[in-house]
Figure 1 (cartoon, rainbow, N blue to C red):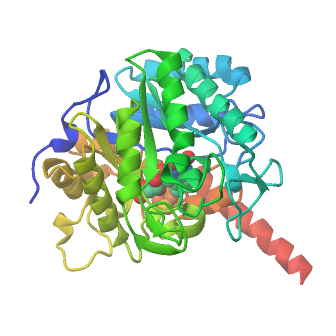
Figure 2 (cartoon, rainbow, N blue to C red; figure 1 turned 120 degrees about the vertical axis):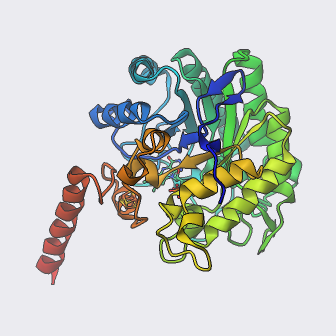
Length: 413
Ligand SMILES: Cc1cc2nc3c(=O)[nH]c(=O)nc-3n(C[C@H](O)[C@H](O)[C@H](O)COP(=O)(O)O)c2cc1C
Ligand code: SF4
């Protein structure tokens, strides 16, 4: 048994301290107001996250440019949102000033929704595509990232997560698939230019050693030419570029690496291990360990994809359930030097009070995520997102959507 309370040991991250090792992962819930600023439901969710006792909360993917969004009600971080974001950050942090708050800044690139925004790409990927970006376009997107980081800083956030994962623009540049001959493609030096320029400019222009910068990275995306594959036409795992990337951003000031995998629009079960076949969670452990070995002591590694483990009642085989739970693996992986912290994604929607319940020995009171993925159904349908198992409001919302669609289908036939 990996007993001990490793999950509740404080840890230094940059110049700050996280009270424990539990992170609320970025979780888009599509409930901004019409300006892209936090709406009523956004306030409610984050106030609860701050009550919930996790060491760090990462704000969901917040777009640096309104023209390239993947969700209609996605949060935005542009000069026009600064006042609203300052108010929001002040209010949620007042609930628990010890919890650190990072904002995940992003651009959707080829995952932008063409129904209401401009879909753009570095090189058209089959089934995705969009307008091919010019070098001038890329330079203005880099400006947008830097402006957003400055807004996050002046609005009172503890840091930013420069999103380099899950198939959004930051990861699209890095892929071996991006073999287009241009300043931002082809050689590894060119493919990392976008990420490195953002880091270098943030360091040069913010100049605050208390402001924490890091990235969530898809170590292996799991399709031919994706990040972490051995070439543009193979999916065979070769982590050399991904590990070089984490060292590259670390050298440019990254204080944490949030390790993820997959690209949910392409390889969903890899990013978010599936309840029927949860085994990919072990791949995540392997990637976390590889990153931990690659970075310097002091750079904080945060592992993700732990939700599927639950209280040990999951579909993992050949293990006893008391050695298969989120709590067991969280403690063991921290103790064994696989990761420094664990992030919870779906589990944070199911029960954002998990950290405080585990800390006070109320494990039995935790609403364990069933990994039913109905919250993703709401996300895909561009609706307000919440847990469709434990939160009556979202259980009812999903029911209503399905009923209305059923009626529409019946009318059509
Ligand atoms: C509804 C929903 C929204 C998500 N939004 C984001 C997001 O904004 N940014 C991000 O990096 N990952 C996002 N993810 C992925 C999670 O942060 C996390 O990486 C993934 O769910 C695996 O962790 P888990 O097994 O703990 O859920 C989202 C996942 C879900 C289900
Ligand atoms: S809807 Fe299902 S997968 Fe999503 S948080 Fe709730 S229990 Fe977990």
